[in-house]
Amino acid sequence: MSNSPRDPVDAIIEQWAQVRPELETTAMEVFGRVNRLSRTLGDRMEKAYARFGIARGEFDVLATLRRSGEPYTLSPRQLSATLMLTTGGMTGRLDKLERAGLLRRSPDPHDRRGLRVTLTDEGLRLVDEAVVAGLAVQTEALSPLSEDQATQLADLLRRLVLATGA
Image 1 (tube, helix red, strand yellow):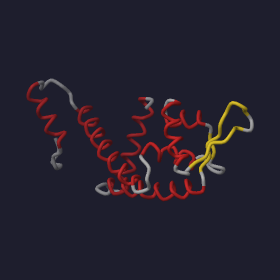
Image 2 (cartoon, helix red, strand yellow; image 1 turned 180 degrees about the vertical axis):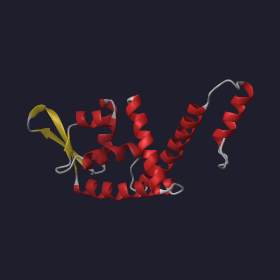
Image 3 (cartoon, one colour; image 1 turned 30 degrees about the vertical axis):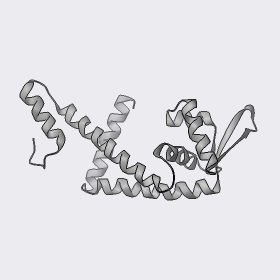
Image 4 (cartoon, helix red, strand yellow; image 1 turned 30 degrees about the horizontal axis):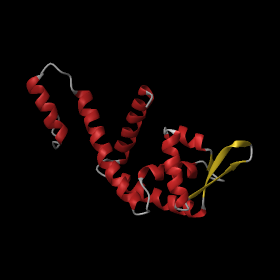
């Protein structure tokens, strides 16, 4: 272990070393920390988005529409595939966001059975503000790292995502 300050994962690793010293626990160190960061940052992101009256999952829908570019329209199937949600889970989110006036559903002019989901002007305004708030939380979390370290971490995590198919 390095001379870095200790975190709760260090205590877990030390306990395993006492009872199973033959275990190689580097993977546990990495993913224990990734999981803790995910939970902590997830909670902080929820708070950031709550100021806008939305949850993280609802932000994801609005952000996906925003990233699609003008006219900020996708089918529910495209949204479900991008967000890895079931159609039932997507319908619930779309219902809530439509009631809030942040998106609208309309018939697909090219498919009588299909729908199109489009950001409203209010949805566009809200997601543009919410993404800035979320980025502020993420940037603050990375503040202990230098720019080079943050870039290296992003590169290493990309390699893991690609290798695992996550």
